[in-house]
Image 1 (spheres, rainbow, N blue to C red):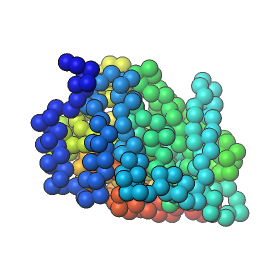
Image 2: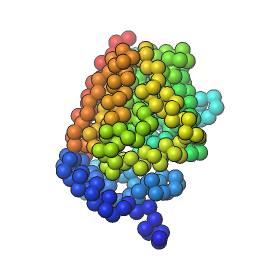
Image 3: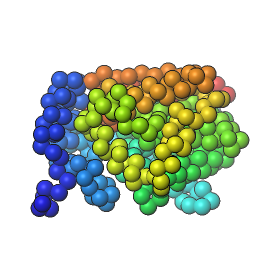
Image 4: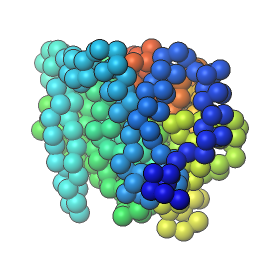
Length: 347
């Protein structure tokens, strides 16, 4: 096989995936998928980790589509009224790089609420930069400071390093929120995909560690269990931008042994979820992880945790951060912001 062909998607599966999307996806989601395809992404499950980390992302596709539409790609123009600044979080064992998003059009007499946000990427690829759209949108919609942190990734740092970094970031925030203009009594957790898992897992880890509890958890298309045979994994086995084979690739790079798959931090539906704050779950219909969200909703209800879940038709995994080009993303961000604002208001 030549270097050019290495990692190329199977042409038959690719054509079938596109045909199914054409029937099920919203027009703007299809336009975004075509913009991504124009960047020639390879099949991540066929690549080395190093190669996978170089692949064009959905954020790159948004940038490409905005350019085709003759629109600005400047994040500060796409989400006006939010300022971004770098931050370093010292967990005691490592320094984590973070970005602080602060709404500048909100005048409050005391500190703003703070949302600790975890990006997606299967705990292996991507970064806070790739997930800028979701974090920035939440700062605007929730009228809150958002701290988006780059936790350490597998395979260099296997499970459970990312979870430990997430908890230590939250611990840091409970002590240092005022340093970034935040109110330590009004904290929330949020994340997308792998980060949606980390948001929930960090909440019960914080409870177990006796830390002050967050007021709300936003979990966007989270990984919530470890079977690849759920209804949505089967239905969306060859979906884009996330498919069943990719999830297996991520998990294979993440875990130390098969025993890790039973750990409640990975299999959230088997965790003790009692005493968690209210949770908002957002799912996309065209996503292998849709059933994970439904199963997590059921598990939270059984644990008597207030939970609300919304499923967005016609959109795929990664839609949430693409509000610059997707109507459903704008709706989902507004809904998430409203839920977070209500939970974080009051002192």
